[in-house]
Length: 393
Image (cartoon, rainbow, N blue to C red; front, side, top):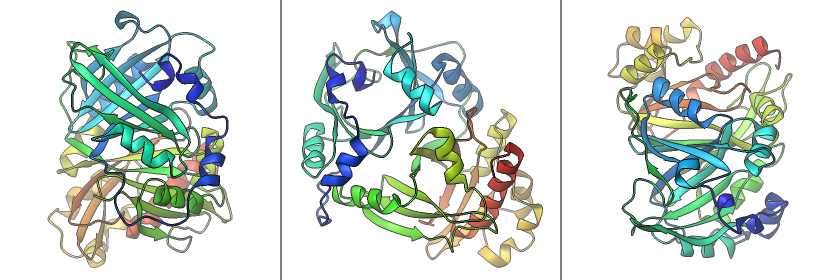
């Protein structure tokens, strides 16, 4: 289901894509949007047990079954389940044999995001525009077809072992991609109100943030939306720095984090240690009723970070009037922040994998375009408490 499973695609892999991409990336940011992205097409996670992971995302998060590929559809090296909710599509992939690239990825990183795929009108043009600006090829433009039509996919390497694919599906009427069949199990729990991917956060190593900010600017035509330094994102013990990159239409946003000096090990250092390098730290998914969504998720067993109850004592003084009752937000642990355009509500899950790496953010925007700067200190103190319990602070 990923390009590496396609015949001959192994030749597209590059031994050190990050170094090559950064070495050849141009330094002048173009003014035109040469890489129009319609949005996030799907996110693929390599997981140790795709069937169980699909069940988890159905049960805990309310994702709906969509498609399946594996032995019954002609694949011999992997099995994949596709689940969706709103405009969010997750592909959960596991190897069927030892000695595979997927298995090596799992051994190094554990369960985590391998592919962030974008929906485009022209996958060939997207590949051409990015590679001529320095992106290292992952998948040459490839036409895949079945009785429902065809798609064209291409792809490039980014930080760590994460890749971006460009998916052109105008002439395809199938359930997901060629090679997949509809998956319609009897077990279909109700959705929880998740709508679309708001942003995805990448963690990179020491002094690598600006390199990858430049990559997204010069190679993919993104612009910097906002930045935070260690004065904005710090506690008494740890700190990090972050810059948020956005594509031309604002539908795709990538905050890029790097560690900053602190008295103890930051969450970014912990992530890199356990993930084995740079990668996607968390996926922020939007809802239009965070109270209902978080209530449903908690009832299904999803665990969230908690800030001290005192966070709510002066909340109205800090953020002004909001539609929600404070006493409704307090027991759920939902955080609130305001910018000049409105406010947002957000809450973060604990890591969903055995390693303290990937987690989810639930977010509802009521005009705000920011990322919860006013909540950083309380949030990271909550993360530090979890690190201390794990013995990794």
